[in-house]
Figure 1 (tube, rainbow, N blue to C red):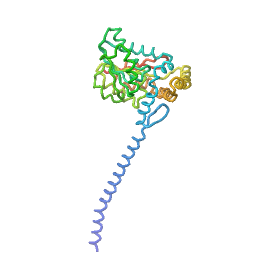
Figure 2: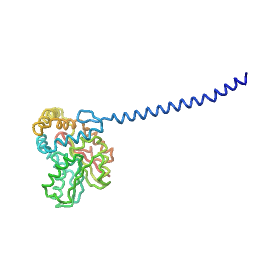
Figure 3: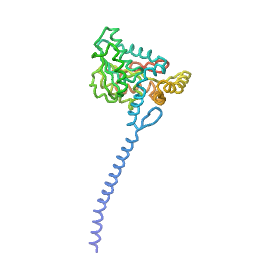
Figure 4: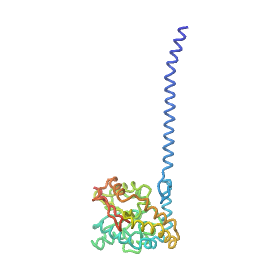
Length: 304
């Protein structure tokens, strides 16, 4: 009898750890499965802004592409009406601040979507020709939207740079410039385009990759107005006037409503300047210059 009791106790002692290990193993597997399922849900539920709307990240690119496909044909006329021509003054200041030298290689990103197609690229080449009598400077224009890029090509076809090796065009995503080699460009510009990108931080990091050591990142973008009186007037003009102009001139209120909303969702000047530094760039002073009370700003960083 005592032998049987001892056998049962021994058997119980042997089985109990096995049961515990089995339970622990099952629990661990369940936990891992739950984590994997949660990660999948998190990835599927990642959202970003499209104007004031929240949309899945994977949808924003196509939504933005459709906006610019809609407005491509009327973009020049519409933007002159929207900004009362002030964007031309901003771009002149942008190029003067760049002060490119002979032989500079410029990458103009979202070059089809800056206000008045190809303005930065043309101003850059004109500056090099007029100031330095230089015909060796070159610009590579890239845009994610083929419709806008085609409009840019049409504009270039009527300039002295048509059929030269000073201008080239590629359909590219600013977050992944796969056609642009590492450390191949002297200057990187993006004007009125970065706020339409899904991951602004990735765009800036990609700019750092393609620039040569000593190269310069420059961004011209709408920003935040600090003066409360001017800010109030700016809001009224943006939300009550611009969409109506879009409907009258381009028969497209919704696209211009998005463009206005996207400006308000872009990071304020200080935050964006920090993003530029986080990507590896060095900045001078605060890293940006406000234009027209902060309606727009020029951001700049150097790859040291």
